[in-house]
Length: 517
Image 1 (cartoon, rainbow, N blue to C red):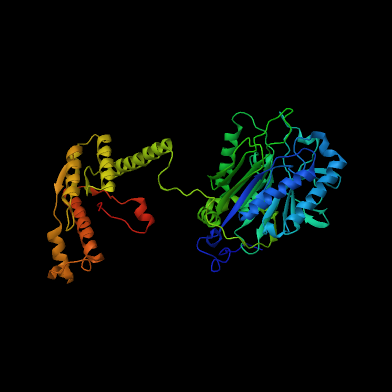
Image 2 (image 1 turned 30 degrees about the horizontal axis):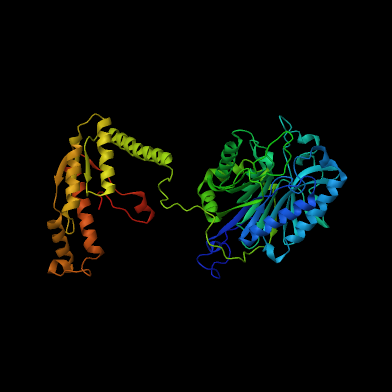
């Protein structure tokens, strides 16, 4: 059945300050300290971190690859004793998801499982006392320090798409996604470690089928420079799939016989980093982030090529099975696990800010240069208020003229004082025009504004004054007169008008057209 649009979890019954009221959800990566070959101890550590995440209103908590027994066991993974103890540990974790403390949070853990005589490296999805599904690893690394193909077979070797596990018949495939019945926008896909490192990961098809939150259980050992590559990999995967991507890698307790581990956990959303864990931590850690499900849906809907590309792989996408589950968040949660920039249009990092300013400035200059070349016009008309926006626009104008080797006097700059223009602001405009060497003009718009106000029958024209008189009509008559003068000047003198509106104005639904102020 096709997924239809959903409003999200019932917002009417929630506080405005509850992130779920805005179709957001909290997700978590948990990295426990592993006790090698002791699934019972690991189940206890996993349960502790899982309950911690659930108590903090997490909707999904993902753990590292083979966390139930430990990754660095080599041939011990094949032992019957390990297999039996892993099943016992999974039974304990299955029961834990039914506890009131779990709150319905999805638990995603890694363990080795036998199916039809074959050993698979698996992710197991548990919730509300049930096994929702099992995802076998598709691509087994068998190069450099890895030799997983010695112990495991890949997903393609599976002979059935269901297995018996803990008394249930459950889906068994890399082509599974888990969709919340109460909010289809919360839809989880899962893959295991190396699966995301290949050119076309299983998560790609999961996303095309509707998964918005992608999870990766990893046991990626650490080498110099690898952490930065993981960041780039996860960022790219989340960006191209328009999804949140949770990456949890093995850490403390894994064997350092020939490898080292840093326990890196990161959460990205559509290419943006939301959360990152402390690396090389000795104990268990939970790293949480608040994901905006509406943003993911909007980004996918706007990019028609995303859906078109999915159509090219329709046969594979249709193989993805949707597993429904019931979940309605019960713990109200404020938006505390998502970075909210104080200045969202301005990077906080000084280096990034320099690069952003360089790009903004040169995009505008090069665009204006091309417009002048294409139109054949050699003069620019601009209104200068003395404020920030028109100052920046005037700098762009003079730089464009410089690049075209035209005199700066070809910039016809006008300051147009109105009823409330102060001497200080007017002085800034006059000094700026003089310092830049443009043709400076002062045009008093008050006489023409008074004519229009009189024609409109406005109270100002009858001599009334005060806050009630200075209404939107009064203000817009002045803004309109400035724009009107600029366009008529451009007609008269053979130029075109350079606007001074900014993006923050457009974001709020209005703009100053033609002149700043």
